[in-house]
Image (cartoon, rainbow, N blue to C red):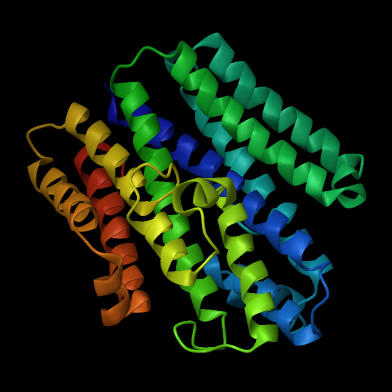
Length: 320
């Protein structure tokens, strides 16, 4: 297939997934901000959200040093100058879809187009301001709908596999960023003794992380026990049966990459396979003993390198 078509499909799925991930993080932060907590703890939460997306410098350049819920929500939802805002991501997803309209089924195109039209209506009518939580649920639902329509209507050819590859590369990147920032947000040593107040805060903290990746019920089903940091890390890094884990995401990347492999992509496939194997045979106690931050930083570097290699091997070299 044409590399330009593959490029548009790859980035259409990445932008849709990014919009959903942003909505998930904003939703959890918004919900937890209404719990009893100090102003300092609330500030850490909103600042962490900007840090996850590497947008803190961009935010402060526009809004100043004061990090307020209203400003962060406005910046991450409707600010067209922020390329990672929900409105920017869904516009980019729709534009990429429009560019390859002929490669999409009618149902898939109409889903993407309707999402953009409905978003602009909701923002103009202030639906977001009236009920942020409902708005975030809508963004997540539209992303789920987009993936479902793609799986249910698209021919599973190369176009489909580039679409899926973009989804899971973006998901792996986001889950790793989320884990890295949220584990660092806990001030107490989570492997040592904690006060009763710390334990109560930690419960809400880890619960929020799980809910942001739809993992709360999954955690209860898998572990049937209290929420601990070690198990949260294990679930979101190594459990291949957890849909938003690093292991599950890399499995999908490798599977789809294998199908579209060409004469130039052998090294890219090898590196993707090695990263998948490293997750498959890792143990959480080894990761934590050598340092979670170092592990996740290296993982992000390898995922970003993988994205770059996929672009070189298959896609049009454009700036996104």
